[in-house]
Image 1 (tube, protein in one colour):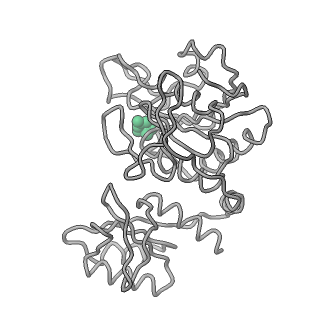
Image 2 (cartoon, rainbow, N blue to C red):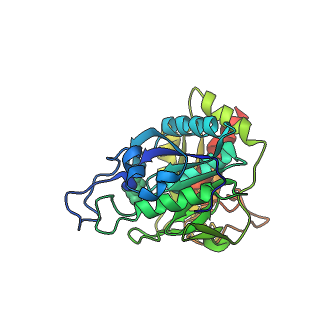
Image 3 (tube, rainbow, N blue to C red):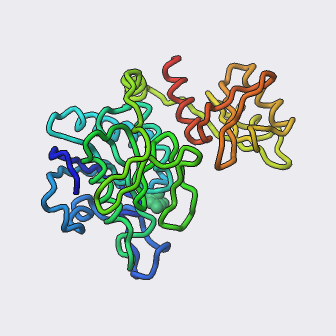
Length: 315
Ligand code: ASP
């Protein structure tokens, strides 16, 4: 393994990588978030010679990821990255919301050192569990000289936080970086770098402070355009009280006229509205006569996080 020689810290949050099933042949009927971080590391003999520190930050199925956990996770990552003898941080995480946590951490930390999320599509008890190899690869990436920013490693592919998205419900290589393509590949413990790492950003510190100190996080909901869409969902959310809305439009962010009218009304009433697309590939391209701003290339779930952070900075 190619490593900087500095310590790598493994922070665990749960997920399928820490999941167990009653039978080794069962890849889907398992319970996520059962094994502790020590057990995950102990399952990989090759790590015995790597200087590691471990910490259990949470133990959840990432479908249940919460802002409280994000706050704790961001603080713990920040704590460890600030230590001179730490070269990088690896986070074990469920696949379901991994792209959201990755985007959030890049937005609030934009670290100069690497923060590598990793995961598994099969539980630790599976006949051919993918978690140990993914964790080993993630530690190799976190120890690679010159690595920086928040990335995700799954099935030997390194994805940037801005681009990574879960694209498959079942296959081991479940993530894609879409048009951007991967940052690189991990091959036998060595990184083959294809493009630049996510960039450090000095504005991230302000976003972290806003998120950590918030008395209440803004409520931003996602609505979707589809055949037969209309105003009802937006009207219900407005009645319930929302601070922002992201719409997953069809195609190039197009909206059913009934839904668009409701969203424009919400915008006129002071609710921030952002228009993304439900397409897995591509980005919404703005037109001069658009009524609603586009998500600047962000998927609906990432646009929601960006809007929450924007609302916190406006507060
Ligand atoms: N539901 C699991 C989770 O996100 C799925 C996984 O990790 O693959 O925690």
